[in-house]
Every structure is written in C-alpha cells, then in structure tokens.
Image (cartoon, rainbow, N blue to C red; front, side, top):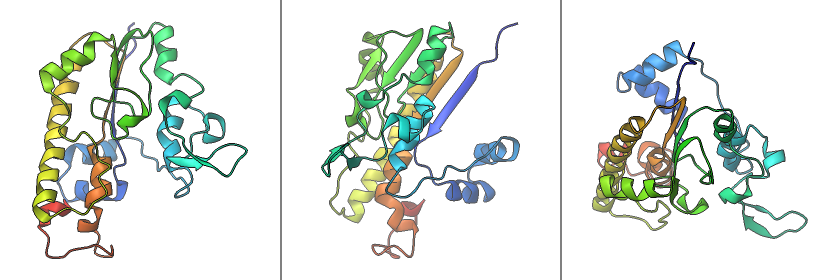
Length: 238
C-alpha cells in the first residue's frame, strides 16, 4: 500500500490573529476550513532573541541552542561582536527532506527560507526564486537547469528585495502592493507547475510576500503605530 502524499504550504510570518479574524469574517474560506478541521498550535519565541530561529528549527528539528541560528544579527561566539547569523550554510545538519530523500521518498522543495540547495536529492529543489531573505543563499536549484527554466516561464519575482528602509509616497505604496500581489500570482503559478513536474511524496512550497507586507504595511493597519495614517487608502491595510 502506497504511503499518502504530504503537501506543505508555508505562509512566512503571517500574523495568526489576522488570519483568524479574516477567516471569521469570510475573507479566507480555505483557512477557515483548515482552522476548523486541523490541528493548530502557536509558535512562541522571545522577541528580538529567537525570531530568526523559527525556520532553521523547522528545517532541522533542532533547537536554536543546537543549530546556533537565533536572529538576523547575534553575538559572535566568545566575543561581543555582532555577526549576520542566518546564512544557510550555517545549518549544522541537513534539513528533514534530505533524510526523506535518502530513505527513498521523492521530494519537491520550493523557496524554503534559510535553506541551501542540496548537492544531491531524490526530487527537485528551488532556492530563493522569491524568498524574503534571498541573501541567505544564492538563487539556485536541483537539478541546476531547473531555475533557468522557471525564470524563463515565470520571470523574476516582481519584488527583488523587501529591505527598503526609506519612507514611500502613497502612490509608491500602492505600486508596491500591486507588485507583492503579482508575486503571489507568479508563485502560485510556479508552484502549480512544479506540482505537475513529477510524482512526489513530499511537496513543500513557501509564500514569503506576507513577510514583506508585515515590514512595510503594518502601520496602515495598526492605529497605535506611530506612523499610522488614518487618511491612507483602506486597501493598504488589507
């Protein structure tokens, strides 16, 4: 008897309270069904200490005390110097899908945050076509030819970098919002394409646009934010 397939869709840094609220209001019917029928558990990390450890912990099943990746910047061991700690090559153990691959399972992995591309895999992997922290590893794939084919089919992600600190005008925020929505559309098309490329036992794909939205649009939603603008277009808050 063949084992059941496992499909994992990640929504990077999505706020769970907003998901519950919008699901309850009827805006997210699929999420409402999943919340009603699935297992739900919170992830709790100390603010500004372990928030960078969530994805590395998920990838490796190791605690930050073991894999050593706590935050974007952290103290270099044995010193008071700061270092960027979330480069994918710092992971001391392989991600769980490489163990599945060696056990004979066929895997498809798309844009898992802070993951490095496997040198050998029973399946396919795409790294940083459209991930939030794309600096963590070079955009690449296994097999190596796959990333070029995907770029030819779907283009580059419309938002090459989310880390733009300057304040935008209202028109620039509108344009930025449109680019992020287009990124979701392209990622959806890319994932659908990869779903059909070959048979798989595990399919893992992650949307990271939600991470970027949290950085740049939260102040439109939160009236307590010091940069909140009550006169801004309502769609910028949703």
